[in-house]
Image (cartoon, rainbow, N blue to C red; front, side, top):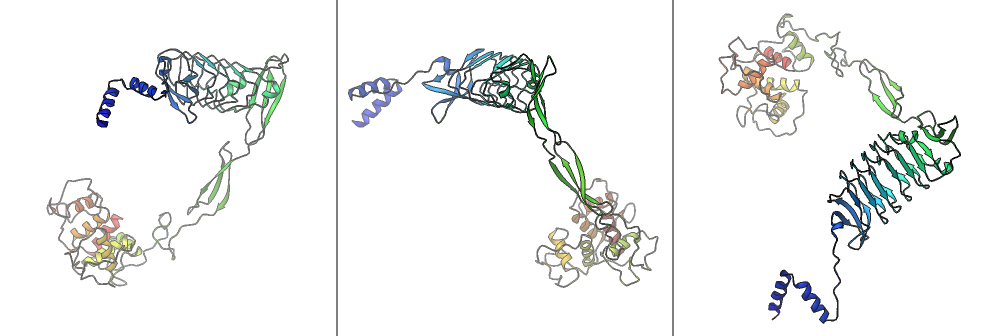
Length: 496
């Protein structure tokens, strides 16, 4: 029986008969269901949001009427707010805001270019920023009695606005409230001149208000206009009333000089120029320098004989090669490379007077030269896959570093063959990988002994393009030839 009754109630609900059935059922029990209010078409066009106090905030408008009156209540609940951007860009010409509304949100009527008339009840206490921005057809506006502040941008871009009326208890006009509203010619103030003197008008973007004729409740025959001079960092500012008919000027409010607001910029000393601190005022641009630090001077090493300054890289005009090898002629193509390698700690000679430029380099020596040229970085780990690379060998760290950085894989998984001669192909490949394996800019291959499938092909073409090597002839690179000491230091010198 209960199951049958459930199905029957569901059927009545779907058929639209449940409200009638519920009313009859409730009446039989001696109770009455609350009446559900029916919304009128006039209020349906106003989008709304229920607030915690159960009043409504208007959030949008879907109607097409040019003249609208915002309802004081919807479905029995009061309308107390007009939300941000609620009527922004709408094609309305007149709007009436009823008693009970307390706040008009930011940009509520922004860009309503056809809006000519606004009637607002005195219950409104706040009008948000840019609320009537770019309402270019608006010619006059009366600020409600309980509104004491005109927010930033409220009437900016209102190019037709000529008259503004302010209540006696008005207090403040924020920056840019009337920016671009240069047509304002008259300000009607319900208070006295003394009260007006206490009204704060931010001078930024409110020149129209300052230039307008002011009419107060106690005018004595003068046609005063407000003149505001903003304070600067060093000069006081003021607001004064100046009569447009005579020379009468009454200063009603003064503003103390702002004082400088300096920010600091530190210029560090260089090798040749002293450093200093610059103080610049963020308001007026005034600046001065102090806290001087003398130039540091070049750092050409402890003995003053480094090739370049360690700080700025400038060449040492007094640099002399620390070692003169009798087997390195002054006109040899590798002379500068040898001098660089020795002075940079990449390698020493084979004796105090010889470099042995034509002696073949081993793989251990080649990787060590490359590692030293890179600044002798510490390997990140101590894992050594090679049985022929012993701890304590001069090339130990260099090999681990090279493996970690993908510069070499060894001659097998467990051998590096440090004593074997390093070929030209191998050293060029090591240098190329240390540089990040860049793609060669030119792919034309001048060498008959460098094949398309060779592992060193990209490295050789890159090295040729970078001027690191030109080959052993115009058509050969000799990739399998042993790389000599002078060739390796030359490659490294050109690649640095």
